[in-house]
Image (cartoon, rainbow, N blue to C red):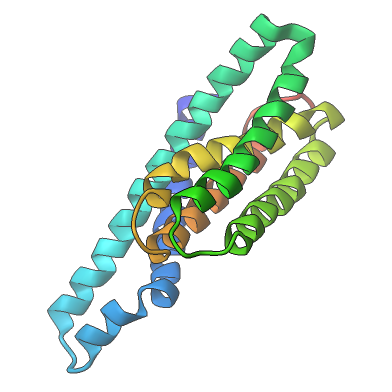
Length: 199
């Protein structure tokens, strides 16, 4: 990938992160907007829009760091584990999903397991869809690495919000992270050689 394509990937991912986070903030941070709209406060509203856009840029950069770290880890895993790399990735996917349910449930107080279970199921289902698209557009054996990236790497990037109190920032962070990760994963083979496996 040359520098022009890398800059394109960086800037478009940055823009997507900012826009998606800003849109998500209208849903998950309605109270913050209501405070500046009743009564109407222009400067506070502009500041709020800039804040959530900037937050989205940060989420995007986290996503891009995770993506390039994944590319390195994937190559390292192939060279070290060789034929065992696929089972290792499947194990890590399973462990991550288990972690999302069990350990978060154990850390919660007076909560049922169902919200955590549905979160893990939703993440897995959406990740499987993205991995299927990646495999269909490249090669079948790209499915497991793509699934690993979308589940494991997204969850690792999501950890700061998972540790925070309240669910608003949990969802405010994971939505742009997931979309940015999916965008980078599906764009990569279009920027390089479409006929080659890149995941």
